[in-house]
Length: 315
Image 1 (cartoon, one colour):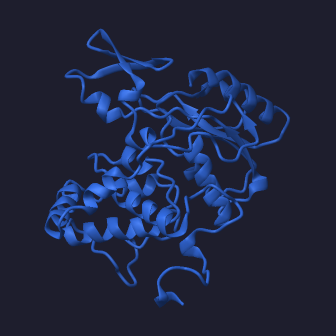
Image 2 (cartoon, helix red, strand yellow):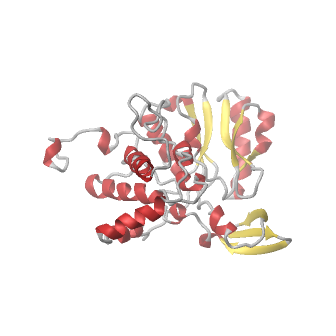
Image 3 (tube, rainbow, N blue to C red):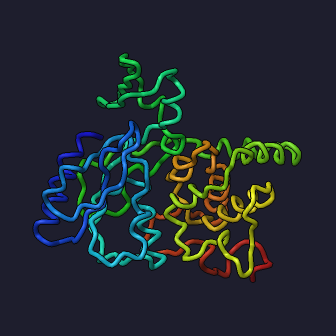
């Protein structure tokens, strides 16, 4: 994916020079390995900062909400699907965007890689499908497919679904992927096993709300956890309040989640937050034939009504 960098820079410089956009939102190299960070380029001479590799996992659609400028945004498959969500939900106008599409072969899992080494990691680079990790002066070669984020390993929409400029040839999408094996595994548990599973899953949560802040779907002016009149959720570390936050946030994302993995990537204690949204994504697919962010011409199933919707209680 590093081959895309020159094209991203060239496109960004051209758009800024000819006045097509006021700003380009992309990535620059982070201050620590495997943590590239969003950047906002407003001058052509600044485009040298832009980078693109397998450490660009943050969803840049998160930075488009209610913006008024004309913006160019670098978008991989899941970013573009969230941009579709934003347009459908009237959070940004399509004419305000120039979408620089990037075919994606997946982002690497920084926690998985860090867990392979006893010493701090000094540098991570890539050469095609090989990830080169330098730790304690020693370079180790890893196959990228072995260290992908879980959502990337399961992704079947790696190409951007909408774009104005494309920085490389579209890639072949993955087929034969069982995206919901983990959902079925949890569903097969007894009620007692499920309860314990989710108790163990959420017990490390420190209620920092990093998952919410990283999610491009969480743009409410006041989140339900911050409401004080009425107060829906307590502010303590009470397990019930923690469960309420995670379950309610997941249902707010039902029919809208693109499985971009931003929530898990941001979590400082490594909670597999996708366990909630993956179940709801599967239900939306089976009940409504719906996957989020694939079309501008249809609203999410929980945002509309059809006479043939399942369950008589909504008729």
